[in-house]
Amino acid sequence: MTRRGANALLALLAFGVLLHAGHALAGPHGAPYDALSDKWLYSLIEFGGAAMLFARAISDPRQRWAWAAIATGMLLWSIGDLLWTVWLDNLEQPPFPSIADAIYFASYASLYFGIIGLGRAGRSSWHDWIDGLIGGLTTAALAAALIFPAVLAATEGSPATVAVTLAYPLLDLLLLCFVVVAVALNRWRADRTWILLGAGLLSTAVADGVYNYQISIGTYAPGTILDSLWPVAVLFVAAAAWQPARVARERDSGHRGAWIPGMFAAGAVALLCYAGTHEVAPLAVALAAAGLGLGVLRTALLMAENRRLLSLATNESLTDGLTGLANRRSLMRDLDEYFAGGAECASHTLALFDLDGFKTYNDTFGHAAGDELLARLADRLTRAVAARASAYRLGGDEFCVLVRGDVEPQDALFETAVEALSADGEHFSVTTSIGSVVMPSEAPSARDALMLADARMYADKGARRGSGRGQVRQVLLQVLSESEPELHRHMSDVARLVLEVSRKMGLPPEQVDVAVRAAELHDVGKVAIPDAILHKPGPLNQEELSFMRKHTLIGERSSRLPAH
Image 1 (spheres, helix red, strand yellow):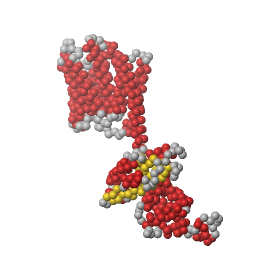
Image 2 (cartoon, rainbow, N blue to C red):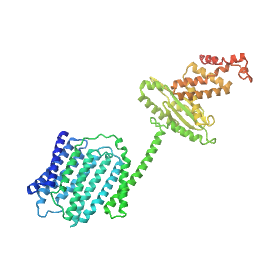
Image 3 (cartoon, helix red, strand yellow):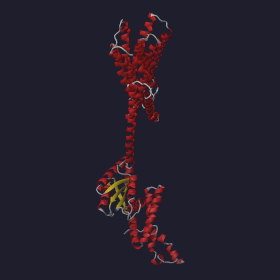
Image 4 (cartoon, rainbow, N blue to C red):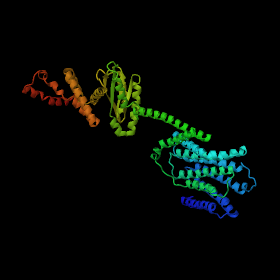
């Protein structure tokens, strides 16, 4: 059925409802007119509504079973009414309860399944179910407080008669409860479908409640406007089925999720407070208490989930998502804890590793292959140092290990780690540069330890290039260290400052490497200055000062000497 055809049939159904209500209010009355309106027009409206619901189930594969269950419930209710029209109502003493009541009860079960299925069409979680139950139980409690006492007080007869009479308002209350649950499962998105469906079921509940009360006290008269509430309910439910689907974003319901169950829980508290000073049906009190208990349970479960999410977020914030290693934030936390121990803390060694040739590998084979290589190397590093150290990934192609104890750069552990972080293939070669620092003897803080280890790593990177320039640099640094230890320390300090400034400027790693190596050698020309000038206690004369100023040119020429 097309939507245009459905709208035409809905208009026809609405016209039938208006005819039925108009007859109830203004007539004409009499045997033929009453039979035509109260029996045949009434049944035609009900079966027409059921047919439209089945048509909706056929045309909507996503919610087919939900609408089919609601349509079946409507059909069963129509069959029950038809039994009264063609048979039971013609008996002098119709039996109560009858087979029609069994059919009515079956229709409720089918409606329950359909409503819950309709609500679960979207994604739902445990708190959606609990929120729905809180709202449903509170709604049922308030309705029970208003309706049930009057029906209960007016009900009399055999146990079966009392049971069936009271079952109808209870089933209607449960139906309203299921509507609220289903809206909660739909993330409280009460669009036109749910508004019309709720209005139809509320019309049914009101009509059933008033009907049962009037039957109990003997004041029910057929053909009044009360009888039109059931056709109105059919019209609302049929119209609900043919509303256009509303595409809702998650944010549509996010702001409602907190206050709606709280509002229902507040209603349950208010009803329980009222019951403390006024007479309220025990059923209403029990339903309100159950809703409030679920509210407490929801709070406890939400707190537990928040603790779990906080723990998960904390763990994720300390873990590298690609390799599973601890990340830079985790390393800084561990270093801060280590240095917080003071002077008495045992020696530890921090080693930084940087992959040489990885950028070329990444550019050649792609980022996916690069990520896979990083994950594989990280796993090898973890297994290589697991017995003595903790491994970290600092980002990009930089790794780190924190070793317990004073470990020399030539230690087998570092050789194993360097080997674990290396890979060779037919068209690529990835090697590793390393820089280590012993704490706290060589570095009194986490910042100093990282800067010194970083500077030594870049020094090793330059040496590993295998060029004559790199070899000359190593020789010059070695000579400087042996002949002028204080000058060597000064140049190392300058290199660390240059490293930090370069990083803060966001320079590429290659430029950082060049800047650090230049800083390490900025005063290397002073090795050619005679000691008499370099260590003269007083001011230099003009000739000595001119000679001293040439140390920069000497250093530049020295760094370009070829290796032999």
